[in-house]
Amino acid sequence: MYNANRKGKQELVEYLLAKKAECGIQTLCQETLLIWGDKDKIFPLSYAYHLQSNLGPKCKLEVIQDMGHAANIDSPDSLNALIKGFILPY
Image 1 (cartoon, helix red, strand yellow):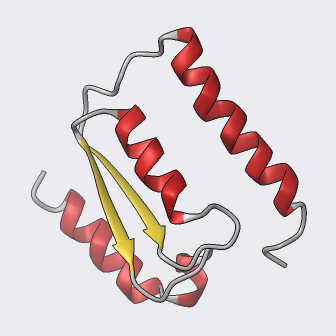
Image 2 (cartoon, rainbow, N blue to C red):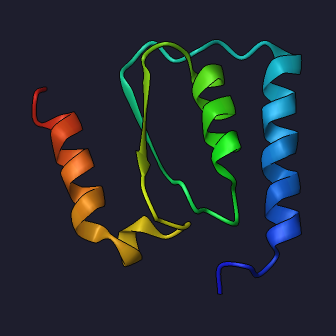
């Protein structure tokens, strides 16, 4: 299920990340939470670090260990805890 169109998805992400650098999109000014599975085979963890650097210093990256692409399905408790921990202080 997650591997459907994998090559196309990877090409899309690579294109978007490259275009961000080309068109000078400004970094985000608000706090942002980026959640990634360390075993994601659709979008490898290296993409998360690249995306985080493009989003700016207010982007917090949380990596769920032993998790693939669908944290909301495979590890909803871990995902929800990260989201709650991020939004409740506000």
